[in-house]
Image (cartoon, rainbow, N blue to C red; front, side, top):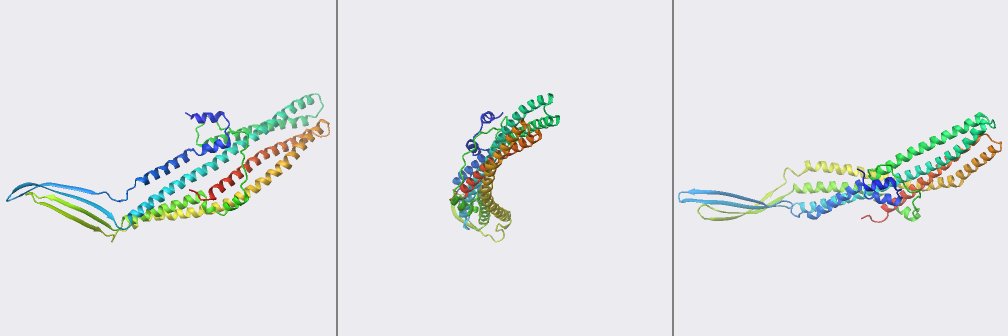
Length: 400
């Protein structure tokens, strides 16, 4: 059964801010946060001693020429590592907590990017569909008038056929946009981890995204090593190395101290201290530490790759901001007005008998393409602004 939230989203348009709020509660983000909380909770309960005490009891009976009596021997021993195991253990636990927290931050960051992209794709599909429906309404109205004119012989059959073809093309544009809207709505639900009964719908208003200040963006572009993916890979490497050091220390020198006491069969009581040392002469933990060190080496490779990707991303962020801004300006200030003016002028000329319906169809097709491109250009620029904001947020200042 879909959740109540999913049912509401199926009928109510989802704003951009609400979508980002839901991204913070997406299944993968919530799971990563619970994992980090579990790590912190576990770290608080880890003992400073690495081994439990051992209590032994040996009851029995002793018999000799003087008589028979009960006898028992009790032992209590405690193993203590003197090779730094306690410190290595605390360090490994702290590194694992940091790794879990970094993983949670990375999941939250990726979820925000994914949801923002999915939301803007739905918004773009909705806008393209609205433009296609308006064009279909216009084409259908003219198609009816052209059909009647063709029957009276006022225009040629070829001109009437051209208009009918454009009406069909407008219908196909609507169907294509409806399919895109359905697919993008489903993808938005998937990004949010929702079991929705219908594709998500979004608000008609674009989010009020502000371009980051030039100095803040420049500062963040020089700190690619603070990107969540880079930090997560670094924390994984450190955690693997910490576990390896912990394991090697656990194979170090151990001191066993304790006491042995007992009652002999005829009433004598014996109390002895015990002391033993385990010296790492042969097994020093190399075999067990090898997979951990190998994993740390792989994590370092992943960190270097993530760093290269973050450095590439900083270049792309700056480029996307400039490119999408320029594209939007050209489409919004030049292409759309010119295409609309050409279509309206061609229609007036056609109605005056100075242009053919084929010319009108070409002009309407160009106008629809221009307005659809304008919708997509707005969404692409909004996404570029959001990515820039995210990059500044995760790379500027100390991330806790």
